Structure formats: C-alpha cells, structure tokens
Image 1 (tube, rainbow, N blue to C red):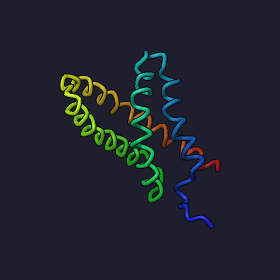
Image 2: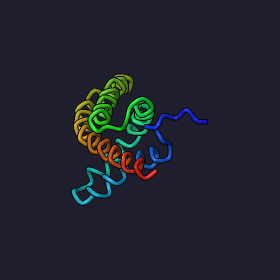
Image 3: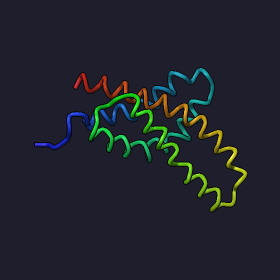
Length: 128
C-alpha cells in the first residue's frame, strides 16, 4: 500500500511540471526570443525552487490555480537574496539592474508557467 495522497501523482506531476514551460515557450516563441530566454534563465530556478515547493504543496492540498501561482511568485522572491549574495560575493553591484529586469520578466513567466502547470496537472489527474 502506498501513502501517496490522492492529490499527488508522480507521473502526471512530472509530465505537467516539465511540459508547462516548454509548451509556453513553444506557443509564445513567435513573440520574440523573450520566451526562449525565460526558459533558459528561469528553467533552472523553476526546477530548483519550484519542484520541491510544488511537491510539498500538492502532498497536502489539491491543485488550485491561485495558491500555485502565489507559490511560484513567492519562490521567485526567494531567489532575491541569492541574487544579492552573488552580487556581493563577486562585487558586481551594477548587475542588480539586470536582475531587476530578470525578476520582472520572471514574475510574468512564473504566473504563466504555474497556471499552465496547474491546468495540465489537473487535466492529467482526471485522465489517470
């Protein structure tokens, strides 16, 4: 017997988690390279911060849009101290302007990716 709660299914979770940003990039690539760079820059942050946070959340709660979107934005804000630490460590304070731009676009893509993840995950759960 497994103790996995009904809200969390590993295979649909992983499929939705990795498909969401790629699908968003594929559908918005015609806008310009912004979505491509969002995937390249935000992808590692999405995996490092989003994966454990989503697993933790979905083990306790059903997949709902608003809480998952808020978790994405909170996890993005959690990377701000990391950016500040790196700027201090490498003495690159002038890069903080670039970080502001990255976090602004990151907030937009965090909302889009998390909403797409939630849609895909709920859709896959209904079919599982």
